[in-house]
Length: 376
Image (tube, rainbow, N blue to C red; front, side, top):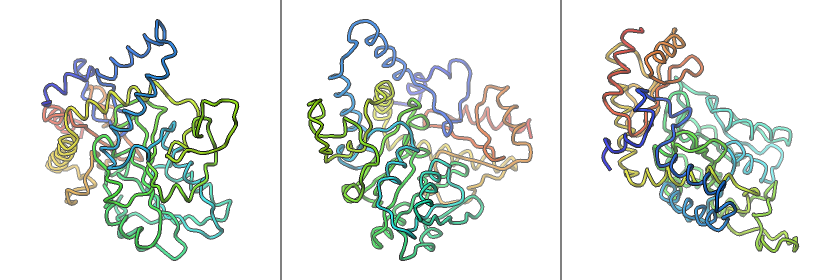
């Protein structure tokens, strides 16, 4: 699929909207709209209770997700949001007093509160200090002690867009018997994440941003080694073997990651994710990643030319993601000025954040840069 065809799948473009805010909420594509229409019609007209078709879609969706993770589908399960995915991990450990978890001071709160909540159990939370909006793998490694049990980090930092070197961090974690957890919501859909190559033990990711899916759905990846160390804090009826033997009440947990899955799942969200993943597959996952990084590099270069200093200017390409940000005293005025021109971005913590996806083109960026020249 070429970029011209890809753009035909996004209805907002026909409305003249230049959408550069995928780090907040992704728009629905036509394939997602079509499958949602089919799903809601079936639920209201004829196949109202077609659970076997839903089970088939669950399994197909997991297969599609394995391409991002380089993992077996048995290592994947669904949840309702990124935070609760991380809560499954945080509440599943048999924590000892003075165990340490390493976080950093520019994490999105979803990757902080599930672990901060463990302080009441005597767990120590260590925050790594950022420098110029960046926390590197080396910064985190320096804070490791003999008591470090878990490190949790975002694949992509939500303000600056810095993409941490997970391969380097994962290697050290594996050598020192530390579990590595990744909040991937600002990466997956734009970038891939090889859990084996990076020695990652746990991933939690919502589907409403770069994956262009619905809110209220997330998925987790969990390694077999980590799963053996966890006890689910909550057990859903579909997390046990022979679940449909309804009155047996045999608490025999599944061997797969589904033992952490709650009861009824967000069926609409899974159908939507399935359609979105098929769109990504059609365009090409490698091509999407290359396009996203190319877009970011183009934006960084052009923002610098108009005297706006991107936070990641002169950063190596391997640390770039789909997010490009800069500080400005009139950030909110820029936000409103661009909105009047139907250009959608975001402001977070006084930082202007631009986050285009693979289908955005030079025309979108030209419109943005020309508007910024006027506004600043």
